[in-house]
Image (cartoon, one colour):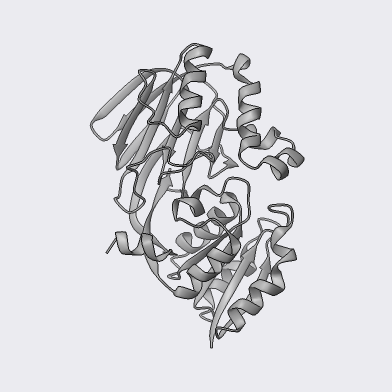
Length: 300
């Protein structure tokens, strides 16, 4: 019998996971996997680190939003714990899970039970913190912290879009210098996104050619522009069109540095951050993750 540690955020997604806990445990138990639940209630991770380093567990499962998955992944990577991670999405956007093609509880359980894993890229900020999906700064990135929880429950990621639209009139640009491999870009911007995979901020297929195993980050810079131009960009993204716009710069890089003289709101995988100025390096195929068969086959 195999053993797994199941780390879950009890309040994520309207307490969805606690209500399904018996179903989750029984599903694994029927397949010969004994799962130990670990209720994530604060950032004190001493016991969790000890448990993951004990050698008892064959793999770890993380359930919550992007911040919860990030938290568990950082423990694995910071402590050089070689163990695959399974993802059960239960947050609002679930960007990392959706980049992996994981959309539901039932689907995620099947993917973990099938046992196919891939080594995925991760971003490393200032040699201190890893991110799996997105490092973002500027306008709109903090809407998740001011969006009504009932709206998030009822409308999911669309609640963030509504909140973002309501703040268009208050947009302020900031100066930004980006050094990305051989590129140096300076100017006034309203938003930057450093992305790993096709989805960010709840927007599906934001970058159709993005790949979380190619060793490159995708950098999106939105220039200072009029509200009309910004609305045009926003609706292109919502309608899943290619963001081909003179006010948007998109490039790939393995390393980049970002500096600014202006205060900038920041998020790392949906959680508030103060990691700025930021030196980012993409670590190629560093984290082992359970993936569905189609994603696995594409990378063989």
